Length: 168
Image 1 (cartoon, helix red, strand yellow):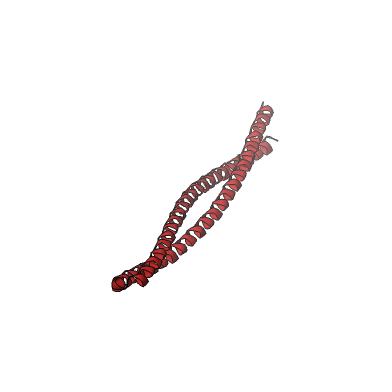
Image 2 (cartoon, rainbow, N blue to C red):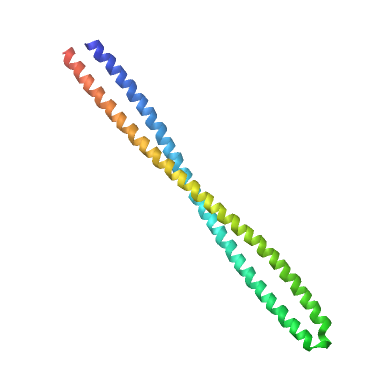
């Protein structure tokens, strides 16, 4: 019976070592998941800030375009009333129109950048959710591994106690 108990004790110790290895691996996975979550949260914050900056630039560019368009209308009205200044006003109107076209191009580019930033935010939010789920799963597996280790250690103590009783 002592030999059987010693065999069971050796198996229980092997189980405990296996549980300990699993525990260590799961702890490392949990730590990596936590680091990934932190990194993704930082990237998400940066993407949100970039999106906010793009939106501000887009709003400012739209306002500048509206101002330019209003000025074009004023200049064209003055042109009709002041024939002596026609050439000057036409030149100024052409420059402002060119500036307005540049601003329109800028708005298109900023709109595209804003859309890309919004997509990046969405993608990072999804990655963050996945990382949080992985971290939660790792925590659950870690708890289960801790419970198995505790059970193995309790069994080792029982077997050693029983062995001492039989040897005595």
